[in-house]
Amino acid sequence: MLSREEVRQLFAALSPGPNRLIAHLLYGSGLRLSEALRLRVKELDVGTSRLHVRDGVGGVSLPDAIAEKYPNAKTEWRWQYVFPSTTLSEDPRSGAVCRHHRSDSAVQRAVKKAADATDIEKRATCHTLRHSFATHRLQDGTDVRTIQKLLGHKQLRTTMQYVHVLEQSGDGVTSPLDTLPKDSA
Image (cartoon, rainbow, N blue to C red; front, top):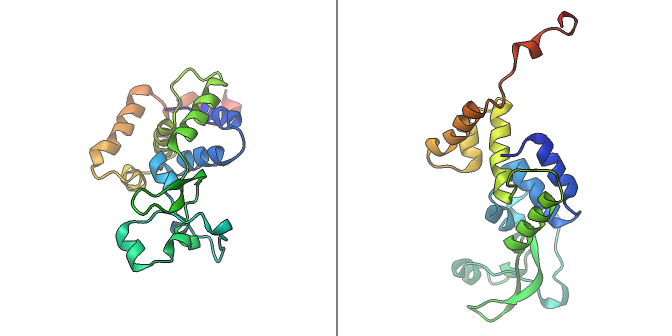
């Protein structure tokens, strides 16, 4: 888990662009990297924006049942990935050229590079941002059931690990000295 200052340092070291945005999303929402990369436009509130697929290429792969039921869905704006790959690939099932989501390894490399460029001594990965999200929410008073729901944990005991980490580390514990009125010190 990173402190808030370490998260700030990590973000400052990330180059502007999609990888920084994805890292912000991981920390800001608690999503797993795979969940963030597989977000589709239809899962966001984007109003009436539309995507124009250039050169007749860029549709996305869809599950067979959806592709059969909605043959034009692969090029519809709402089915596009929020973080598309920078390259095109061939769908192994249909042979069609399409655009997949951004590679998780590209984001992981960017976060590692940013962490290496800081003075952070702890291991800082994409998944560390998810842990930091949960821990900081707990420190801010969010109840553990809400965090369980946000993280998508089926078992409460999985989420309770964050509570135990806080109890053991002493993070979030306020000294009585810190709560004294300023003129008393």
